[in-house]
Image 1 (tube, helix red, strand yellow):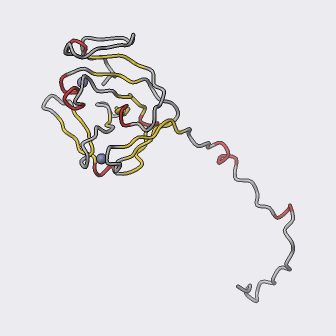
Image 2: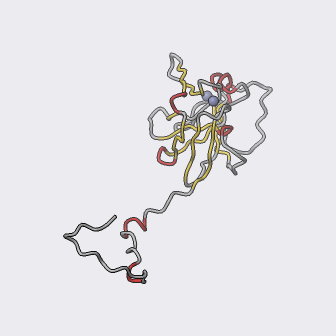
Image 3: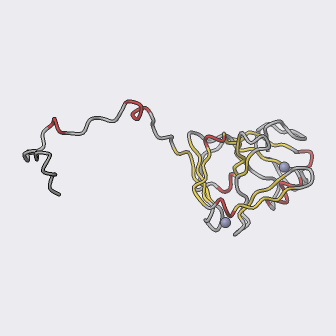
Length: 170
Ligand SMILES: [Zn+2]
Ligand SMILES: [Zn+2]
């Protein structure tokens, strides 16, 4: 496009070092991207999420609700800081079941896969360890409601065990 007549057109010059764009403002330089710690998804792949910075250890709850929701001897969840969790897509397909006592279970409405849900106080997320992609290295935080565990469930680690609930655990 030609410059309007009111503005004298600048002569064409070959680019020089003086013409390179200025560096971005300093505040942009300090906003480094958070390191991705893990990605996860449901069975059908519609719901996807990701975790940043670092992965907390996995905790197991052996209560009867968590056994039924998982179909096995316990659940297996990471208690993740809310600011280290992000949905990538598909949240509209999340479904939630809640008992009269307030225990709740979140899953994909398409495939039934257990999915992350906020902790009761809303400050953190319970993230099902089995929904993570690949084989992330995870420590073991411990086991709760071991008193409800049936005999056929074997615990084969040295992590702490509690007969009932522990504050902040799943
Ligand atoms: Zn799904
Ligand atoms: Zn439980």
